[in-house]
Image (tube, rainbow, N blue to C red; front, side):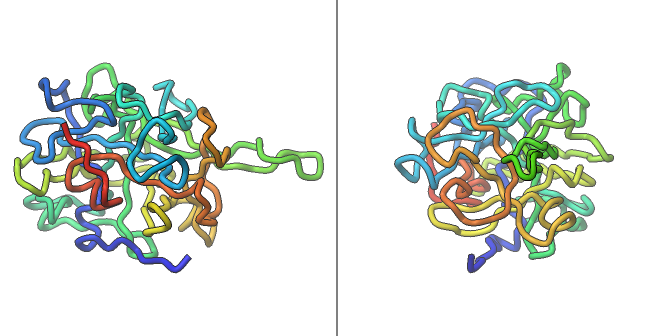
Length: 286
């Protein structure tokens, strides 16, 4: 494709907002997915979701949309598609921007802090980590950040592709893996109550198999590239892909070479400012 990398404020304000260490107060945590008020003043600052906008019937997620879903919140469980359902919290994720360092005052314009630096992939695009957070709640029983029970969107090599020369081809499938592996440290987002919808959460030293970057626009949305496969293991983009390529729920997703097909084009679901800066156009706030 002819890439127009979403440079959105220098890549510093791209993220689906922050986390919470407790269950949110009534009116601030809802599904559909985990949408928050447009100008949050309390936690959770705003969870979000992702749906394949190239499939389905419209630019807004609805009953025809297939959505990134973690139905089994266990280590190494599959991440699949399911039909968008505003009552399902297993479609809720929290996205953190990756920073080289975090220092100084953090703000919407400077999530890593005035003295910190964001991490950019070789194309100059910001990198992000997605944590499964039903209703903004960490999966760890303590409900706290940086705990081993918290799980993030990752990939694993599985020989379950088409049979080639009597063997199944290698595929990179999406799974949940421990977020705080390889020394990752997560920082909570900061509510501010302003029109810019709060300062996103950030992470340093994440597991590089768990970092993703959006590229686009492409068709009705963006493609989301896995940074380990795209920038280190191979020399072309491996992007989030629905292998079913149709309205088939339950497909085990994968990271697959970019072809810009409809089954690779996705959008962020969310109503706060940051997710709309990744994939503008979706506003569905309570």
